[in-house]
Amino acid sequence: MNSQNLTTLIAELRRDEGVDYSPYKDTKGVPTVGVGHNLNAKPLPAGWKYPLNDVQVDALLDDDLEDVFHDLDRFLPWWTDLSDVRQRAIANFVFQLGITKALGFTKSLPLIRQGKYAAAADNMLLSDWAKQTPSRAKRVTQMIRTGQPQS
Image (tube, rainbow, N blue to C red):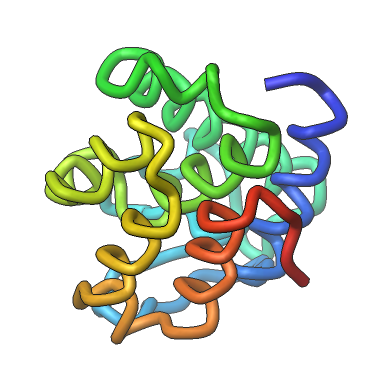
């Protein structure tokens, strides 16, 4: 992902996830901090205290994004062939769900790979993910469908 696209993705994730300097429980009851950082999956580094500062929040996000990109490269290597907008949509989707749950979209992902974006978006909108986070799902699927940014 090029640097300009990464900067845009970070802004989109900050909008979609919010930014919290102290821990809270997300909609599934998972302790979370920063920009959607799952504390069960990865506790804070030793010595960090709440509230976090901007540098710490950015460090957590950078680390989480490295994990997302690694997972995408490993399991969906074709994602880098997508347009910038669709790369951001897939990265946002995997950031939110994690790679294991994202790989459960066994109809949508092959459709995206085949360039059948409208069918993939339609299929994704039938999921529990879309019901649980409808605004975000609508934005992400529109990015997949049209290849255009969404606000």
